[in-house]
Length: 615
Image (cartoon, rainbow, N blue to C red; front, side):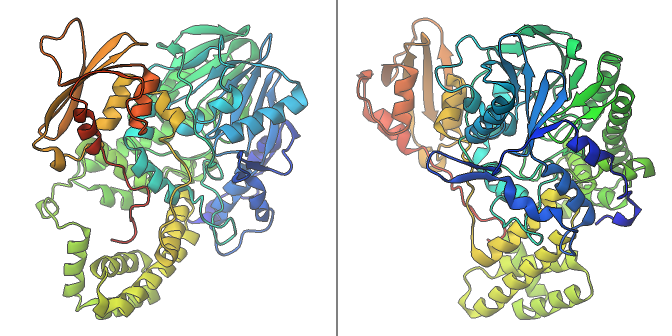
């Protein structure tokens, strides 16, 4: 845990910038869905107006005070932001006929509320363009809140090359596991209170409304590409492999404003998020930030991003970007230096320190990413999960390993006594490790029920203390959410990344991939079947083969050499209907219809509430 005493709490620059350009707030700042359920409540953070209590890290408290500011703000003439109505910002750029929306938040409900706030003060302008800065859900999920069905005709939707592929791979392929872990990372189920959830560093928390996805119509494929949307000229810089696999910065030359997407925000970002993701490349991240400084040099007076508040002044932006560049370069290069000296990820995380100038910079603090888990992520990117010590090559899985540790400690009761001694000594990190072993070693064991319950409560207490001392928002939320789950059971996620709108946006190949990863392989070991899907609205034919427990598929060109066991001629809408259980009504078929029923019987449904802090 970092020492807050070395930080300049009397520096109000961030507060001045966060308040600059304020026009109006949404009051009350509560967004509900069509059923009247609250999907976002920024008013719940009113307690942040008070002094930091001893249940929170002062630096994280300060960051939460900044992120909780809510309302419509003017960035510069013609550019506005709505902040504080979701984890991310929605930016609006006024054109000749209407308004261009950049990053429509997570949920359709919050995006609609943000657009309504803008229109209340700037007029009822139509949405004439939509830009996704990158492929994370908090930057596209609210699309239907600004472009409802039937209104998108003729509206260009711009995104970096590869956007749809990466949006799907993160939110659909591994969506169930990521969504479950996001419950811990963002703490959306925790009470909003001084001893509970006080933000996530990058923003306050995630909204829990309807996630949508309107596919892009214009791909940005190279740096220097220019597009004019509603009379507004935009110059793009592709930055793939940085904060997201598909991402881009862009300049509004006539407005002298630079959008930094999520590549440079007012915190240290994640090289690997705690919810899980593809490991990012800190080396290339630093290089693209350096390119940003040089490519757009002298052409802007303000820079804004998809989170936090803008930075005004050309020289101030350059200073900010240089520090952000150096932050990711230093993390990368020093991790590699120590890695090549033989240190493992956890060992590097214990010894690596930032240069004092970066350590003191508010925007380089570990509110969202952290030095500790970013170093481990860089190690993972280069050397993987195995640290080279063969003792770690074939360890027992968590429950079996825990039982053996607890047995070595003399059994659950003696292990619990020793864990409490470590708590008393102030060694909360090892107390958490030992108590976690006891919890995993005694699942459903009637003989040790009292001991197991005591261990769960003791572990929850330790998690509370670790969370309240954390400067990193996701660390705090993970610890406190884990404590709550130990005490009260699983809190399932509110967010659904596999909803109808998301699925409808998938290409046919992506849709079939999403089915393949849900096949119960062992149950299908002896299956051998082929099904052809002839999609009438795409004029394409896809052959599905289930063999040796694996569902593979390919698009066929021309007449197939061998007939499939079953052929279906149908539209994409009918295919979605079949997958949602509506049957074959209206679908032309040839062959054995039972093959489809058999295939669908092999498709599993993932558990959205699988255990994490208990076995």
